[in-house]
Image 1 (cartoon, rainbow, N blue to C red):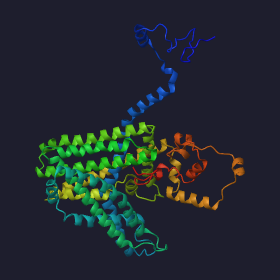
Image 2 (cartoon, rainbow, N blue to C red; image 1 turned 90 degrees about the horizontal axis):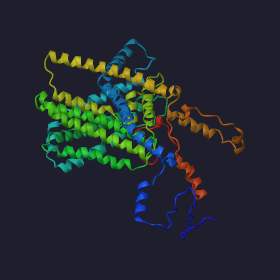
Image 3 (spheres, rainbow, N blue to C red; image 1 turned 180 degrees about the horizontal axis):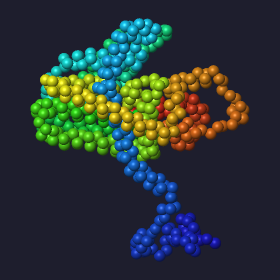
Image 4 (cartoon, rainbow, N blue to C red; image 1 turned 90 degrees about the vertical axis):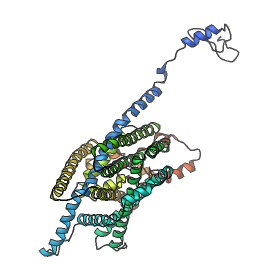
Length: 513
């Protein structure tokens, strides 16, 4: 008979610990001795502690994987940005030369310009018109107007400018795409647009307004650099840490994290250009004295370091709370590399700079226009020697662009091969493929349950499921009490999207990140 204590607990007699409910032989010494010698075995819950250790390792891997993605994305943005200064003017000249020579050669049957050349000419005209409009904007007057405002008011203005920049980027690329398609749409199709000229005027107005917005943003940052107590710069840097609070404690999926990563790449590159503009304006005010550059250097490093620290902390805790592996950043790199490689194909349906604009929300035309405006107003070109220096600088930029493109193309091919995505290069665009799938689904009726059960299921390869957000285990384990509500929810559940279909402002789940 096993003795039982008064609280119902069985008292084990042999080879066991005494029952804690036993009231016999109590003393303070025995209690302290038991507390000092009491032990436990972590291997009894090995799975739990192994998972916690893997989470720590994942957090330690995040800075390296994130910076590899950021570095690759930075050079992608740099390639699209340099394209506006280097190859785009040459392509516009070739298109205009073809426009003049084709009628003279009597080639009436051929098209005057190819669709890509039409887009290049439109970009060139937009840049020329917007630059002529920007010449009437006085940067000095804008600087003194902003400098006269209070610190709190400037902080609010800077936050409003960041929101406006995102809104302009989301709608601006649609305006440019609508212009390109309207100008190159086949003539045999039914006219369903308002005309090329209204679209062109809308594009010119957008680029001009977006450039003015970025100029105000750069001017506010310049005022923060030149303030005596640096209070405005400190407040603007603290705004980055507020971003952690708004992002970390939310549910994220792989597609949402991909959008956030693209946004961080675009934001970091834009901040670098803004810092370059601030340095140019300050160096001009001090007659290009190199000693003043070292005065600005600590503030520049502080802004960049705070941006990097915020990104690392934000992504580390987002991946921790949402149980996302650090290997997902390799998938993001492969997706961005796929855009670059596919734009070099003969059957490419978009230019690479436009692909970067859609994927990351980075539109290089307004930023390039502002940089040209600042450089031309800061640097005075006089004499033949100055023109020779400008020519050598332009040749150096072309060299940098070509080298950057070659290295990026080789690196991207390596990422695509590692991801086993070569066969996707010959597939139709995701939008075309999805429309074809919808049309085929509407034509072919669904099979009956008996036919589905008799049909053998083929195993899927890794390439079929790569870059596709998997269904979460928690969603599969949830069982609703009401089966009717469960079936209704399954009907309206949106399908998971492939990363190749995710643009910067695509709605993933219930929000845009």
